[in-house]
Image (cartoon, rainbow, N blue to C red; front, side):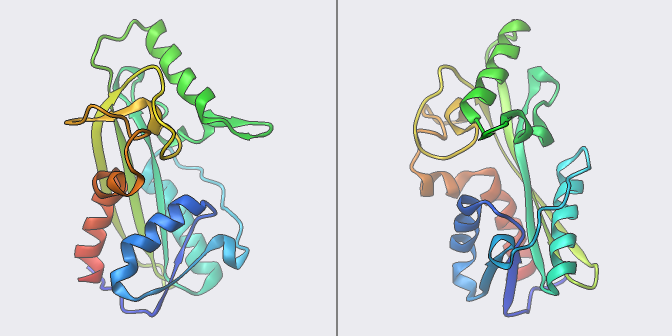
Length: 202
């Protein structure tokens, strides 16, 4: 496994929440961090039907256009009774002509579960795949997840995306009700990050 020895890392995202989370996780390593948004890099089209494929597209596009090692994350919620949907299309389900509407997306998930009369518990997991790519084409892949279930009605104002309808196993509150930094300790992204740090930074 290749160790990360460069002084600067590009995080391949335009999502400020995700960027802030990653900066916090990598703080102990003293790496200068920039992002696609800061460098004005475009978001490449995500054409794969799996998290690894899409994270690879984003990481390699960013590394190639910037000349910096680049870290990309592709993540989403996988609902068992929906055959794994929305999965890689997690963000797409929220798209409207006026931007992303996650309450609408969560309502869509619950409506589909109700239409199927899916039995409780309506199990689901958040998945995160991190790809760290270098400008020479090498990459390392790390996958994380957290299991839980879908609940209704939506609960909580914290977090983002589908957090208000996801209750992780062992908890009686949703990600939407959990303190953001507490959530970040147990989340799918934290799981993937722990593997990345052990593999490339320690």
